[in-house]
Length: 413
Ligand SMILES: Cc1cc2nc3c(=O)[nH]c(=O)nc-3n(C[C@H](O)[C@H](O)[C@H](O)COP(=O)(O)OP(=O)(O)OC[C@H]3O[C@@H](n4cnc5c(N)ncnc54)[C@H](O)[C@@H]3O)c2cc1C
Image (cartoon, rainbow, N blue to C red; front, side, top):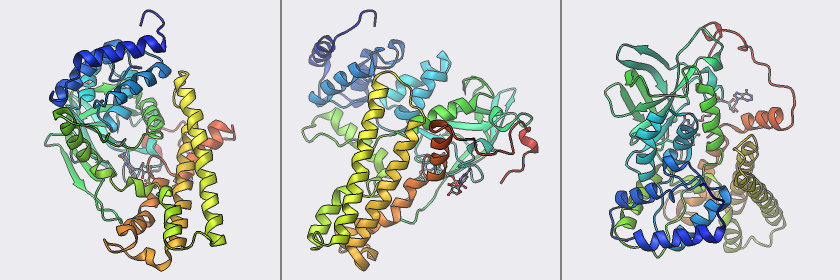
């Protein structure tokens, strides 16, 4: 924006805009189109790309006003949280033109195609290969653990395009159209009974020549930015109780479908919120060992909350997400493990029973078999510790035999 704006000005402008435009019976895509074109959907983004170039602080004023007016916002998930920020930072104007607005309106959905069977923690060792042919890029190989790939329209893909340079330099990031004969998606089933992830196979899958994000060979920077955003990917917010009208009906249906792969995620986080009521219900709130373990859990949760508030303040002051995201990621994993431990302590052998007539209709058991995922998804605990050691504490880097060696000469697997 050309002039500095005050909170009151922004608040008044959003209120007026909502009074002029919000109609509960609009189709969701039409409402989101208005929101995108006004810039209120993502106010920190540039004006040309569905934003207003506002500071993080002012954007919170906008969010407060949208919440107060009980209107649906942009869709939740990978598209808005990971892909759009990455396209804004690295994408060509043509890619932004083609993909930013439909992502904000929810007309297209995305998945992240990074991990491979032999490249998870060592993501830079990935071996899906893409080559530039006369009719565009062709990609062959396999991805795994791809959340939501079965329903996504497009994938944010990392593939190797140069085998003669060191591993980090030969990777390229692409926008891959998922709905084509060269892409096959097979769902996986987890130990908690859900099926949130997929294997994705590429057999000469086609990517238009201009669908490279950044420069060929520049994919590692794109990957690092994506992972920094991923470490602070938020859970789906609850739908307001007072929502009504067509736009909300469609938004709720969309959120229910998008949240399907994530519906066990509250259990994955350990359900600290249920610990005290469970201890009381099972008459163990006075047990000294249970009390001590609950106190440890609360101590961890509170310090993690203060740390995340500090990170939010840094972002509001305009800082990019950095290695501090690893502290939050590691903290959430410790909290989840401690919460699962306390739930098991309280439940005793009853915690082994699943099903509707077991403790909390199976939730306690689901916590036990879901919590391990939080120490793996988005980078394992060990990898977060390495990042903290190297990039926050300044300790020596982990030895890497692949440094300076062309990828085709590096032993992999
Ligand atoms: C719930 C969930 C959701 C996911 N969603 C997605 C998704 O949507 N898209 C996607 O692309 N991927 C996704 N993943 C994949 C995830 O990013 C990988 O599983 C993760 O990076 C670990 O890789 P890996 O499974 O290959 O384990 P490996 O890398 O093989 O690691 C095995 C073990 O070795 C340890 N280890 C490995 N290297 C080191 C090292 N250098 N130092 C110390 N210890 C080490 C690890 O910590 C781990 O304990 C998801 C995973 C989970 C569990």
